[in-house]
Image (cartoon, rainbow, N blue to C red; front, side):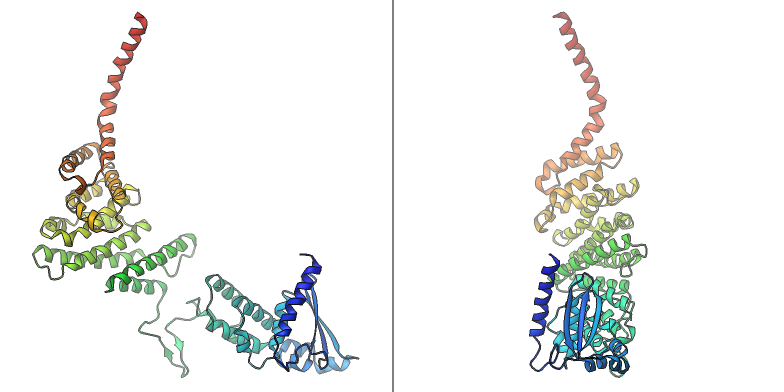
Length: 458
C-alpha cells in the first residue's frame, strides 16, 4: 500500500474507535480539549487528537513529568501542541489514550482480543499508565489464550519487567518457574491448592498422570488418555533432544521402568493365578498386558527398550504357564511379544544375539498359539506388520538357527493356515542364503559351457 492509502486506512480505523466512545465521553473533544496531541508512527503516518492535560497527567506518570504545571505556564496559546514520534502502532496508542477516559477499564477491554491487549499493555507500560497496565494484566490473567499467543504473552512480560505490577499472576499460567503450583496464596495469605493435587515438577506430574492412566477403571477413557499422554511424552522427548538444557517436564528412564516393573509384577501375579485355575481376576491379565504394551511403545519410541526385551525374554515361568491359561485371557500377552518382534525387525530395538535367541526360545511357541486369537480379537491389528517383524527377527540370527526355526514354521503353517503367521518371504530369504549361492552358481557354469559348445559346432 502507498503511504497515502495507509494514512486513509489509519484514519478510518481511528474513526471507528472514536465512534465507539460512549455519549458524553470527552476523548477527542475539540471544544474542551486543551492539548493538540499529534502521534507519528515510525513509517511516517500521523494523526492529531484533542485531549485534556488534566486527564493525561492524572493517569500517566510519563505525561505528569512532561506536561507539568511549569510547562503549562510556559505555553502561550491553547490548545498546547504536543508531538509523540516513533510510535510502534498509532492505532493502539489511540486505544490506550481512550482508556484513560474510561471509568471501567476492565469492561472496556473485554471486547478486545489478546493481541490488541498486549499492544495496549506495551503502550501503557511505556507511558507509565498504571491503571491501564493493571487492567491489561487482569484481562490476560483471566482470558483464554490460543497456543500461539502464549509465547507472545510471556515474551512481552519478560521485556517489560512488570514484576511489581501483578505480572506474576499471568506468568503462572505458562511457567512453573515463577511459583510452584502448590504455593498459591489465598486472600488470607495462606497457601491454597485446588482439587486433590499438590504441586510438583514436570516429571512428578507426568509420572502421576501415567499412574492414573495405568490404574483407571473406564476403558474408553483410558484409551483416550493413553493417546494424550503418549503425545505429551513424545513432544517432551523431542524438546529434550533439541535443547541443550533438556526438558524440565520429561519422564526419566528410571520412572518409565518403575511403572513398567509394577505392571509386570501384576501381570505375573494374575497370570500365574490363572494358570493355577484361579480365574477370579483373570481379566487383569489383559489389562496389565495392555499397560505393558503401551509403556513398551513409549520405550521403543525413546530407543530405551533393550532392558525390557531382556527382562521379557527371561520370563520363562510365564511362558511355561502359558498353556494352562485359557486363550481368551492370555492372547493379549502375546501382543507384547509381537511388539518386540516389530521393534527388532525395524531396527528400533538393538540387543545381542543371545537376547534375541532367548526371546524366541521363550516366547515364539506361545506367540504361535495365540496368533489366531490375536488376529480375530484385536481390532486394528496389522497382521502383515507383525509377520514382517517376526520374519526379520529370525533373519538376524545365525543361519543354522534360522534354518531350525523356519523349517519348524513351515510344518506348522501347513497344518494351521491363517492361525499361523505367514513368514514366507523370510523363508525364501533364508533358502537363498543357505543354498542358492552355494549350489546355484556351479549349476550355471556347465550350462554356459554347453551353450558355447553348441555355438562352436554350428
